[in-house]
Image (cartoon, rainbow, N blue to C red):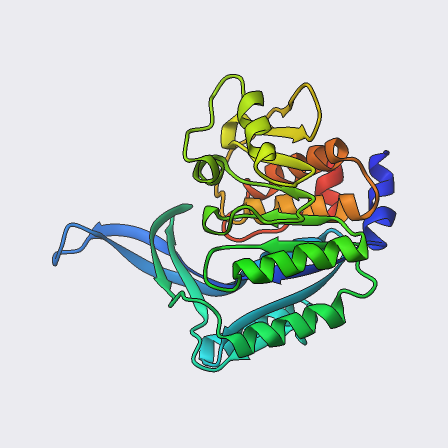
Length: 319
């Protein structure tokens, strides 16, 4: 694989992204004094903006890398839901798979930033299982939109979008279509039957097996994890320790060192990882090649402030 071939490879990849849709809001300013009312900083607001988060950030990363993303998920039937759809249109994403759920609340994460540091985060959300009627609507959209895609991503933030039954159905559907199925997981919905590869961080992996991920030899942990699932591989994302890739049946684990650069914000880095994995696996690259590309792309986005994407040119430069 040559890095100059990536553009043409990714342009031919169409990915279906299903998951929790989140509106990320950023209030940016500066701090010059402490409040006289309480020992907290006073942020003088300079800018407010919104960005697509959760599964929509995965779709945004796919588009930024030259691929085509088809997004399916639920927002609230509220003003933030309308703002989410507006942001998706601005980003050039198809919005036909975004369902305004009556009685649902759009998930909004508001981050107050000062001098490149997050001062506080305010979350608006009401989690809970998606009603059966909305689940049925999601299945219908997935059935319709899965035609012609090269891969499917489940972006799970444990906000209620997925039931165990829905995840099993998705696993069966991707097997039927013979396409890679990539999962950004949460322990509550383990074990994601039928997944091709799952990308847990350290905390999520610990939640799967109810024991810590060792800092040294990770191979026994990875083997035990795959013994309890039907996944073909697992990609453990370990922060400044990099990544660890284990493929079923292998006698070794592939360690991928973190790319050394200044980290400004890790928001959405996991979204970038699954976006690249889906494009690369959908284009026929190996697990190892895909993981190396994902690692390089993640190193780009953690060097940016807020919910960020990595372009194809930035990925080439990083490589």
